[in-house]
Length: 467
Image: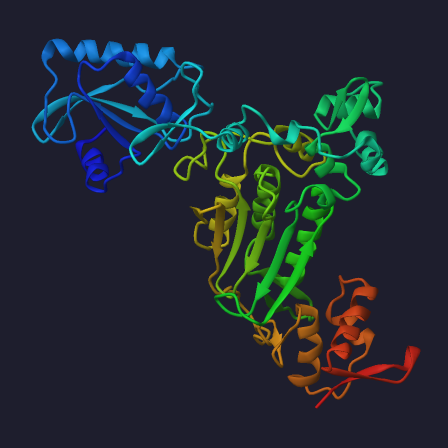
């Protein structure tokens, strides 16, 4: 612990993060401050100095103060495990500095009280704040609680059977037994009920019972939110949401395209698809589902991609240690998504995202805590490829209306390549990996919005640009 760090906190008036007690303060007073800091955002307790005047700890007092700190830490329930106190020199005065790290793993109780810090005071936690802290720290997990007003029939048992069929190592266990083991069902008075995890993973209509358990995905034309955008509200179970987000990303991410001698297209997305997928799966697996006023937001701008999750970082995870620290507030959800092949239980995948961004010569992700959640931002740079590049096309917007990449190919075919008409077959040849029904819907959408005009019927139909 450095003098400069402590002085910075003092100069900022961070009364919740720094407190002072006399060198011979009672153990109970020291324990109150330590417990309150542990239940908030950590902090530093200085022994031997008051806010108004320096009172250096004497030689004999130093050992006594350290022993009192250790006794205070052990009197808290569960015992508070913190770094050993340091003897530091602040403005010429020696004092004992006790650091309580941010993001402690438990909720700490002292003599039947749960304390927190507010305006430099140790105050009791209000019931709703205590419940939220217990959920956040994992002492009580929201995913393990029974889903309110639900019954076993609210699960989609076709999805359950599909999951169970592909699960190995469970012997002759029934579907009910497996879901009980995985924390997706809970038994009460002989009756099985879905847990919140079970409802999110296998529910027929999870959003009916858990508001905000969805994903809002949008692509904006510029660097900020504006009137021109493509939006998709993604509902369903968590596995379904992940799959639908992948489809949205394939449709919405810009591509750098190289044309080979055989006119085959080699495409590189503006962001590595696997990196974005890792971040989406991470958000779905680790967000705080007890917060039901907001869902996950995936916004794509012209210069960046943002994924925002409700709730702060779980347990001991912080911005500084997010690459190395491992903690899951939703262990049951993580386990089932791992069984399904969506997630590796060994870690968050953040290190993998860093490697993928580096391989594609893109900036490292930016992690930030917001007022109500956590945000990851990926920033793009122009895709550099060799060879004859396809034109920039329309940047996702045509005549002030959003268009997807396939629709851009159709408009490019008509405008830049100066063709008078386009057929379903023409667009299919431009997008050989896309299903024919998707091609038909893309052209029909352009007709419905007054961009194209359909001419002819059935197999003889074609489309022209509406002037």
